[in-house]
Amino acid sequence: MAQDSGFIDVLTVVDVDKVISKYHPNASADEPGVSISDCVYMLVRRDEAVGAEAIPELTFAAKTSDTLRWRLASLTLNTRYSAVLYKMRVSGNPDCITRPQPLVSNIKVPVPEVSGGQSSGFNTQDYVDFFLQSTALSPTATVPNQKVTYQLYVQITDNQGNKVGTYSWDPYITITT
Image 1: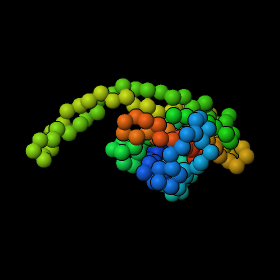
Image 2: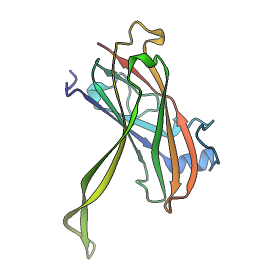
Image 3: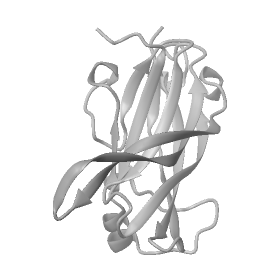
Image 4: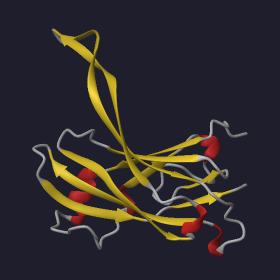
């Protein structure tokens, strides 16, 4: 039974090192032509997943009026390359969800205190949390393909903030009730 919080958080993890080694840096502007689906792992709470998790074509079940939030992280956690989810476009059955909106919240996150090779507690630091948010509007059972298809766009930068390339892939959503 799914936890009924009214929110579904989708975490997308990108193996940025694999993207760069396999698909190479590119000068693509806003519409990348290369899908990096084999470098993407998408996660939701286990009871929200429809089928397998940690795959690029994650299907999750949402209810009408659920708030959907997408976030992205680099598998290397920004040590060599960073990745940011900068755009989402709905291409299949767009009337089933609201247009995804970029949102920012300013929060504090814990950071370990390290001294002499030991972690001795933690402090906090300011963090800008960026995510895309949408609302499920209607069930997908009566629409073509019975799902909402969308494209996620990611920009990769090096650890100095220089653009390395832009890439995309296309997962989908099933809205159950």
